[in-house]
Image (cartoon, rainbow, N blue to C red; front, side, top):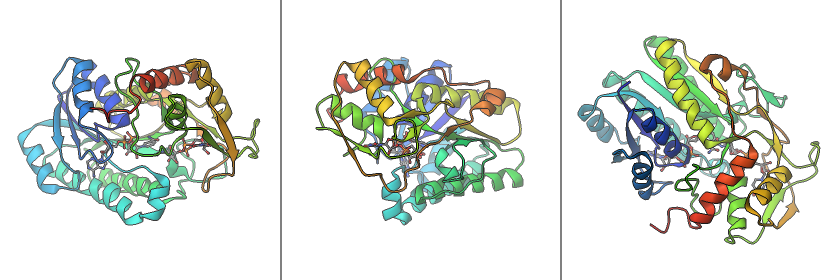
Length: 339
Ligand code: NAD
Ligand code: WQD
């Protein structure tokens, strides 16, 4: 395998994936517009991998920039993480999401086609399932997103299914992530959201480090064992390993691969708080407030297909997810912002 271009590689999941690609001996380039990440990530990736990581500061919607990148470098594959991911923002600013996530992807795929690059991994999401009326999502579960963000992911999946149909030589993997959490074991890279975190784990860790007073728990009246929401939290390093497994599988299998990347085991909000308290030794003050609009009581992955076709399964449990998040947060209370 030659060189891999990672769009959005300065972001949370992309940066962890870059480390594993580099450790596997691949040459990696990162293309990112830094709209939700920091330049300092690249130096840390170089420090952790001992390799030079080419960084291209560009937007995937910038056709001229992509054309220049593809004409100057021979990439064998693209891993496409670049995109916006905040559900509530997507509801308020739908055009921003369709432009960034859908139009951006179209420009990228067109320029890949012009450059004869036909191996692609796309960051999809469990959000594409929406509210299908069951709690364990298999890849065959109907796709009915319930927010604009999820709609953009389904649209890009549909575009890629059509590209594959028209261009059978394309090798495509659609990876549907569940709830990525955790950080690299070194404590040098992790999730560093700008502003108030939308998601549970970064919020808990910012409370633990003293940046926020308390966690708001969105509802304890769900029909779940402790009344709080159940999700399938997956360690970001397991997720990153799933991308390497998908790259390997694409080299052997010419069909379009669509797989869930989750653990198959749900945990509640209260279980995550308690695991974090155990890992950090810090008490997390919290207050139960009303349900958050658009939240489902429970969902998790049917993770069997990934095991079967990628020979991949998640290995790390919530204690390790919390311990790694805490190491990162404690050592970098302001994320990458101090750099
Ligand atoms: P992130 O925001 O940390 O990373 C995304 C990166 O893409 C950022 O570095 C950002 O600067 C960059 N980017 C955004 N728009 C761009 C553009 N137009 N051109 C170039 N770069 C651009 O998010 P993440 O959590 O690492 O997510 C990565 C991908 O995985 C996203 O596509 C996201 O939708 C998807 N995903 C994330 C989750 C999750 O909960 N984190 C779950 C399922 C799917
Ligand atoms: C988890 C649980 C909340 C914050 C989102 C996106 C999804 C995917 C992953 C990209 C829920 C509860 C949360 C807080 C809380 N992203 N919670 N207090 O909503 O499952 O999924 O991220 O593709 O598309 O929707 O993740 O971490 O926001 O919430 O009580 O301050 O924690 O109600 O039960 P979610 P989350």
